Image (cartoon, rainbow, N blue to C red; front, side):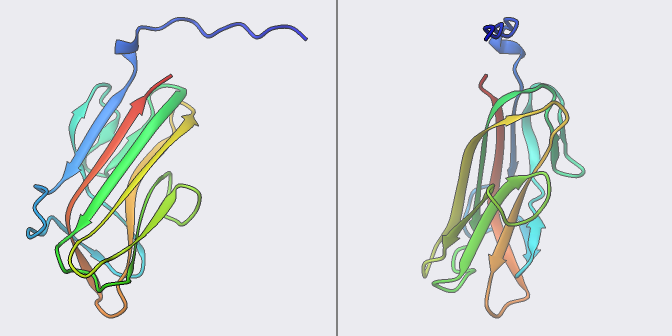
Length: 155
């Protein structure tokens, strides 16, 4: 068995980083309204994008390089917007769906939010988006107060 050659060295400053946000962070302000009981993309806007890889019009990030990435997402529903015990899920993937990249949380009586983080190897050109599933038992829509989507190549 022949040893595998190490990858060519790159300066860490050439590795992509992106931070996109929605809303002010206040739990009382509505930043986006999403339909309940279906997957819905969160319309975050880039606050920082080192490689211009995020499309603000579609809220889609396209990886500019092959590598190991740390993906992060968080969402907060308007305070009191989900009944206690309702499911709230958040995903980061190439399409809006349930699966290994989707994380469920359960709403309490006053505050609802979900955090989703993972490390994954991605090819150049991989499409990523941040999306939610608000399993509200009665309402047709759910108000989102804030969200954040981060992508950082770490290797």
